Amino acid sequence: MNAIKNVTLTEFSNNIDSLLDEVLEKGISLEINKNGRLLKIVPVEKKINLII
Image (cartoon, rainbow, N blue to C red; front, side, top):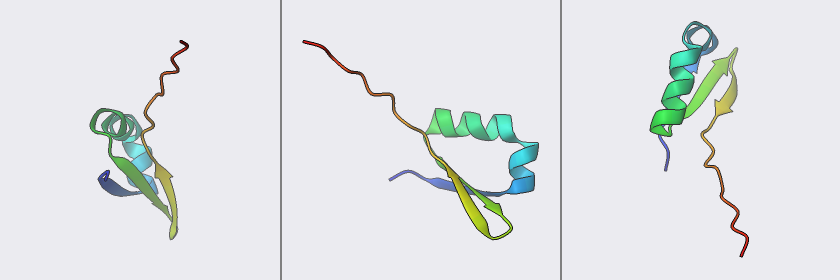
């Protein structure tokens, strides 16, 4: 199960580059609280299609 990091919209806006790097490098999900509503950014593994 992936870890989830919770941030406010202000924190996300001020630190977007480092937060997105953290999602990609550590595989954590990022949950952004905007006035009580939640947005989620999750890492996606690239699937490799093999043609045989």
